[in-house]
Image (cartoon, rainbow over all chains, first blue to last red; front, side):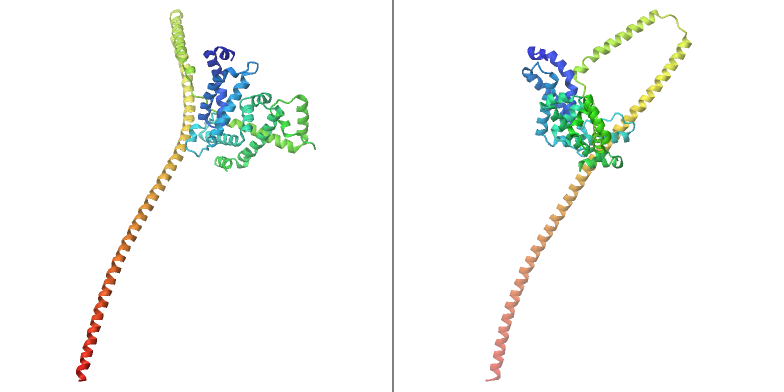
Length: 195
Length: 210
């Protein structure tokens, strides 16, 4: 990052993009629930990183800075398109952009069931308030430590913990009826969450 | 019983609690069914998050440009190895070589069939999903067409009814005018005849009483 910041080194920037692209893309897809928006947002994040390269404080960690930029870009996008992220499978266009894969499935039926479970999880996450969703996504999918999340969000670690507790409580309330063994069926899963 | 605060469970849940906190919380969990149920629910939810997997992104220019060079290098290595082998290898037993090749080929063909079968299964799965999506789309389109047809029929019916009513109205007006004219004519004729009859009666009365 130092070479990008001081020498406008495009080669070094390309290396940074290569190293971070997939992580940032995944964060954006998880936060917006939409693969196309996620891809576009990831590109915008790197454009912004380059644009703001002079603002980066070399005494701090690059990872914290880039996660923060990505997260803020996601928040902006979610405020701009509040409905876009909550498309359900019933929308005929949404199947193109959900970006759900179920590679472990052995049969088409298993694949369908896995896809429905993935859709339930996606919808449940999207129903969480953004700040709760962010801590869950950063910890569970991006493997950041709770302390690192606190740095990214610029809040005390206790706040991260309390947001995480609330996020998990809400997520459990949303997922538990859907995944409970007695109610688990391929038709019921989606309906329970959409109600 | 003093329960720990909810946020106190989070470092334990993610394996970030220090030894003392971990011991204290785990001891509490063994004696408090309420907290144990809550924490195990949270653990289940975290496990369920793994159901949402993301696909790999589309390949970028950066990733694809090195490939032709890599393939060219690999091809060069294979050709060189073949050349070296061709001119340096000792004479071999053709029968033995054939047997080895046969067993290798059989194994490869078997693997190929297995891979093909797996690929077909995956492709069928994807096709089924696409068909389901296409079927939903087709059903929606059909439903829309049906609604449009019904609306068109309703519009036609309404227009026909309105036209008929208008025609009936016109007919009714015409009949009414004609009837009124006839009645007026009849009334006028009747008046004349009454007047004439009265004059005749008057004349007859005059003749009988000179």
